[in-house]
Amino acid sequence: MIEIEGISKRYGETTVVRDVSLTIAPRTVTVIVGTSGSGKTTLLRIINRLVEPTSGTIKLDGEDNRSLPDYELRRRIGYAIQGHGLFPHRTVAQNIATVPTLLGWDRARIEAKVNELLTLFQLDPVAFGPRYPHELSGGQQQRVGVARALAAEPKVLLMDEPFGALDPIIRAKAQDDLLAIQKHFETTIVLVTHDMEEAFHLADRIAVMDKGEVVQYATPAEMLVKPATVFVESLIGAGERPFRLLAIDTVADAVEPGVAEGEAIASSASQREALSMLLWSGRKALPVVGPDGAVIGKVSLDGLAQRAAGPT
Ligand SMILES: Nc1ncnc2c1ncn2[C@@H]1O[C@H](COP(=O)(O)OP(=O)(O)OP(=O)(O)O)[C@@H](O)[C@H]1O
Image (cartoon, rainbow, N blue to C red):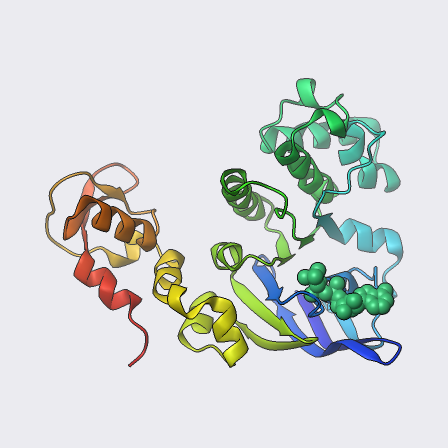
């Protein structure tokens, strides 16, 4: 659990973070969004004390982060940034081993961890471990950056625009990989992004920052149905609301009894994907198949239309 209590940050006369209080539950993904210069990066860096707040407290599992020595903070909190910040003159394996080495792990343990992470990120340890960052594609470097941040098995992972430089297809894959890894390690993730699509895809909760303040902190569904301010509404993109709402839930939650003709959709697909398939194929309903491939009912255009409608 991360408790952010009354955090403010001033540079001279300018307040860049103003009285922010948030509680971040363990094993969740919190996404911070907002306009450029609204204080997102500053707030993130206050959590791991790369920036000292002017006032307020950060507690990690009940402990004030100022009471923890630096090495303990590095162990508990991983940090991944856009451009991955890999050390260019160290190999991939040495990059990933950075924090474990600082913590004095023995060689066998470090090697096992590096191999485990490279394998998890679908990079062959034998082929990629000895390479230097410039010998990797942007997407591969980004995965190594996240692997490095996870090397000491931190409970918390802070990510600042980690996928900013990736093309849309690799980006979508990187997001899905991140969610799988988050579940695997039960990590608490706080991620900053400009991309609302990414925010809605990843977040359990979204914090919207505007001029240094958090103006809304809510689940994606709450935010879509009840944006707290006109700014939040414009950020969400009013025209996108029904589609974002459908993107949050899976077809499993929209299954109706009955049969439908034609190609089926998996119950694990998003309702937005079902809508797309319905419109594209010109059908009124699709058969739905469960994880074992058996048909479990149908999903209909009318049913999705009701789910996509805002409160009246
Ligand atoms: N070391 C510093 N000294 C003075 N001002 C700073 C410093 N660091 C950040 N700022 C200012 O604080 C404000 C918030 O910066 P921050 O990087 O947190 O914003 P952000 O929301 O992450 O922006 P972006 O989305 O553009 O990265 C900006 O106006 C920035 O110029």
